[in-house]
Length: 307
Ligand SMILES: CC(C)(COP(=O)(O)OP(=O)(O)OC[C@H]1O[C@@H](n2cnc3c(N)ncnc32)[C@H](O)[C@@H]1OP(=O)(O)O)[C@@H](O)C(=O)NCCC(=O)NCCS
Image (cartoon, rainbow, N blue to C red):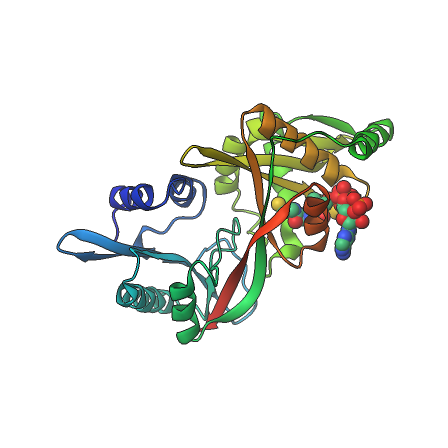
């Protein structure tokens, strides 16, 4: 079983910027300390994995989706990864999971498995019987040359003239923003929404995000919002914008205006790159990102296996 401090050290020494993920794991999302497994030899941590069943997720009848958030090992020790995969699978079976998803789909996409970058890991999963469930793209653009195009300015003017209010979010908006996010992302996940009663964790998460959120209001209702997270990779600081618009308010330009607003704030905050992770079938979002000058850097594979 893992100890959080040890895992944090591992994250820090191996992946600059991964500190955010451990914070997400332990503070803002459902966290199961029993799901952390560490592989040690002579007191040296060689790798670890994190597996869990999120009790907030509503599964299809007769199904229970367990997650393997990842297997992280020092390079070129596949036997450690195999062992961690076996142990994590056993743990998910103990929790009566019927299926394993890699990686975590419940809160954010996380990194999937990249066939080129993680060839060893990808092979390990394929050999263990996992198959590709979906793909996602990692897309990015430089913010150095960011300038809001005239067509976006025109869209913004038209939307404001239509009676929509664009403003920064306040603490009081937390509940409305959570509801918006649940509604907006409902169809992009197969096992969401979270239970309506379980808002505590979502509120905690929202508290951290609210200062970075802008929203569109219409008839006193929050109908779209955008925020961002930040990751540091050595000296490079990357901003990750996120946008959500209620289904009935889509295709009016709200998403684009919110997205460009957030890109502007990322640039103002000194970030040099904006990046997004998006499921390849999320056509409107991919379209919006491409139109905003984003290119695909990497294709991630998301895997599933019945157990
Ligand atoms: C992505 C999202 C924010 C876009 O919001 P929106 O208010 O509809 O965005 P806009 O109206 O500004 O632009 C949508 C664009 O997608 C295009 N589009 C819509 N459906 C499309 C489809 N099936 N295939 C390709 N393009 C599509 C629209 O034509 C429009 O293009 P245009 O700018 O060339 O006119 C919204 O769909 C959403 O909330 N999705 C769920 C949450 C999500 O996936 N967020 C992104 C990941 S963080």
